Image 1 (tube, rainbow, N blue to C red):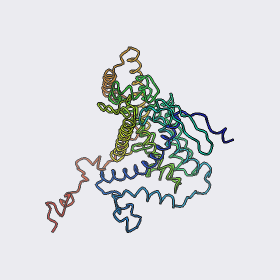
Image 2 (cartoon, rainbow, N blue to C red):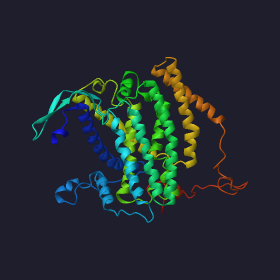
Image 3 (tube, rainbow, N blue to C red):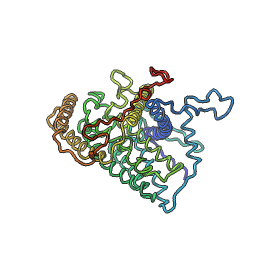
Image 4 (tube, rainbow, N blue to C red):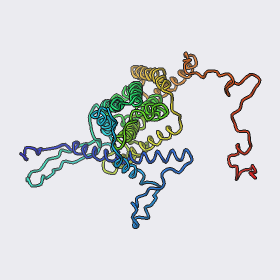
Length: 450
């Protein structure tokens, strides 16, 4: 029976894909923990604070005292222990099966979506054999060109889109199964938002696929290597994709599904312990996958102009490690930029979010697809022509925007006598009038306090 279970041969791609998948999953889990740390540090710098700076890796042991503090790098470990030790509470009258299933449903797509990303390009693997202990048999491994990806399939981009769309079920199930009106409203908001922003995201990807003419991730990188990064050839599609990526991950300024001021905590209000932690981790895992997808489509993947090791045709261990480092660096920069956006822009109203999608991004994304289709039909496939057409589209949208009808909903009502509409003949000011209150440094500054 054991002999029947041992295959005669395996492909090198199967072995490399299995190892890549296992390694990248654990790297992403570790990166997610430190993404939370990085977000807290970035927000602290923006708000002129220190952020986490106490928890190190000394664990209270004297011989590890030199690791005490360590810039707060032990904070993710402390947070993980806290989540593990907290009470796993479920309110009464919840659907316990779906209440438990929802966090699992949202974390799994976030941890398998990256599978088609070619992290290290292609390497050549020779044929070799693997001896099977205690059987006297061996498995022949068929070598050849191997892609450093968890899943090397022809329909790679379609796979990623299909997997990313499953995450909405975790949000909807969690909101409904919680038996809480705020959670239910948060789930409805997230569902409508994700469905709306999947349209411009799909349109922007379609515009890219029309240009490069392939679904293979490696061929998309190769096209950008031979021509120009698609960030410069398709800037409008890149902007639409990035905004849709923030909305799909429920990141600010599109985090209305978990707005504390309106919905207490959103769709995960009733969750605690590790079930809540899975929701928390899924958001950052989606950021990692989204950043990798953006890097693949618009930033040339692992390619850097002028660096021979990052060329798609470069094979070997050193080029593979260089490509891994470049790809990981670009993804890190994308994640940091998403964090800066969160702590820079205020949260939008829910009606504004839906208006931006249906009256702004979807029409513009349709225009991008039509323009790309016309240029490709006319045989004008040079990247700079697409860039010029994108600039022309931006100018046209900027010119016609003032001519479009404006909604009168949610406008500020004139309240007679308020600071915005004072009584005739009077002047209202809300700024402090005392010089001491207007001084930024009252003690060290120019104003005398005694």
